[in-house]
Amino acid sequence: MSCATCHDPAYAYGPPNALAVQMGGSALDKPGLRAVPSLRYKLVTPAYSDALFDPDGAEPPGPGGGFNWDGRSNTLAEQAAQPLLSDFEMGNRSAQEVVDKVRQASYAPMFLEAFGGQAFADADKAFVFITQSLEAFQKEDPDFRPYSSKFDAYVMRGEGVLSVPEQRGKAVFYDPRRGNCAACHIPDLNQFTDQMYASIGVPRNPAIPANGSEKFYDLGLCGPLRKGFTGAVPDSSDELCGMFKTPTLRNVATRSVFFHNGVITSLEQAIRFYNTRDTHPEIWYPTKGGVPRSTPSASFPSYGLVATQYDGGKVQKFNDLPERYRENIDPQMPLDGRAPASAPAMSEQDIADLICFLNTLTDGFVKPAGKDASSGKCVS
Image 1 (cartoon, rainbow, N blue to C red):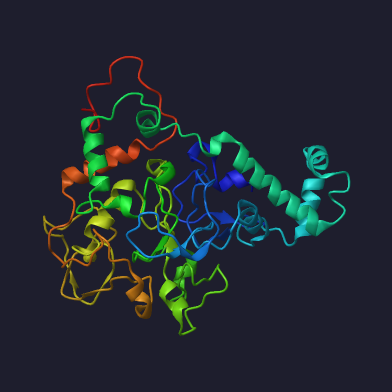
Image 2 (cartoon, rainbow, N blue to C red; image 1 turned 60 degrees about the vertical axis):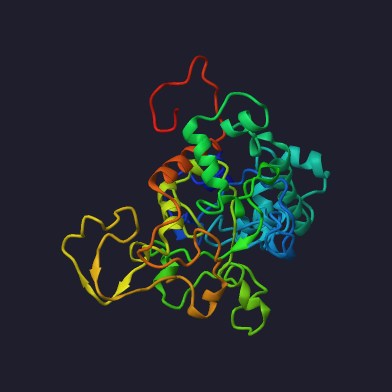
């Protein structure tokens, strides 16, 4: 496999399929633990800090920065080293094995030209050079930050206009009483992420083989992939367990899976999870006990992860986070703990409009030669 196997340029350097986790290893038969993020718009990513300044100014400094879902890499070069040596990604057993492959590659002469005629003499140094090459590629190739979406044309270059639904969706995005998306996906520097971490209680994904063990939990900043934090230590590190980095929303409409575990499979479903996690938890989390209905009632939502309606029983809310860490869950709107069966923050129109706005963040926008088409949900 190559870097592009999981970070496909045709899919904004994200995954080209709808798998929750990608397959890798020497025989391409080992599943990963997390969904693959996009590699676009990483240039201004700061190094990880336990007390990074929150750019929206609404919260005190907290965990932020770094690469990966858990910030365990401080540079693109550090990040590039991990999949090369991961047994469930590229499957190389050592730095020497990676260096030997590059030595035999068609681009080896260019590598020697860049790093000197003895660049392969020391395997550890050569491996660093390899990761630095990958970092340089991502920093220097403008395709990793094209800023070519409709939003960029409108906001950054003053070209064209947003349709009425797109403008309404932009209002929902910023409105702290409805979408409140900008609280974390802040458009600061047009990155659409605050580089911070949050725990939002995403449902457990049974499609990830590791989740077949009841003892396994992916706790983000507390591991298992990141080392240094552990929920077993009764100190301040416990308050970081279950937190994952806020990804950019640029090109979010091109994705097929969402959140760190890929449990959500469409942009609309992701928005509806935010909107109804608390008001209708029974459609996102399993119910223990109770009697399943043969046919759900007409009012039972069909857009969630659970298609069966139960009479009685207890919803296993936040089923992918041990109970002792549930105090870490972010209480911001619309995930604000509102009562079950109460009104969600966003209306159906709000959801439709927000989807329209988020589609304007997709790179590769081409301004129509003539007047915009007169049909479609996102056209005024």
